[in-house]
Length: 151
Image 1 (tube, rainbow, N blue to C red):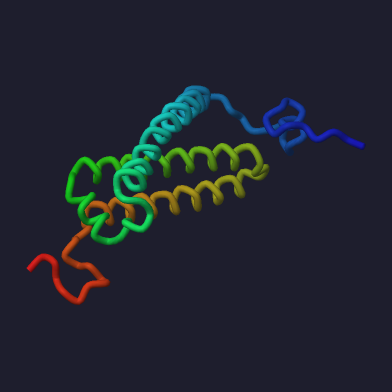
Image 2: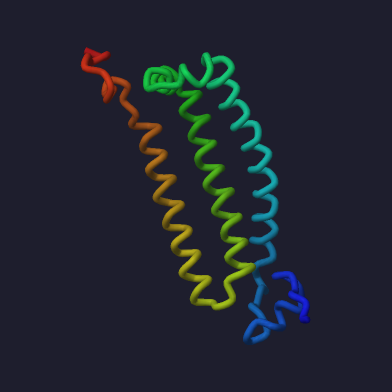
């Protein structure tokens, strides 16, 4: 029975064809990436708990969450920026985590490249669409109302 080495161990690096990837020059990026994960995770805890507290405790519970609640909340620029920060940090945090997983487990350079390209493309699309929704949201376009609320 053979032991399976951890992805970042020296045994794993030697077992990959070509003796492993050259990581020279990536030290600072990986250090900043590691630091970003810790800081963004801490910021996300505050942002998400604040979001949940305002929506569920102060907002009247889950039954009060509807189009009008979101329209009222996003009328205030503070909540637009709050939700925007939560979106951006969550996407960057998740993308960075997935990038790390791809680096650890994708053995072929070409596979690693295409997985990262797909990841970055999907992340950019989601961030752009989410940002557009937050800043172009029009409360006068309530799809469930037969009456316009902003005549």
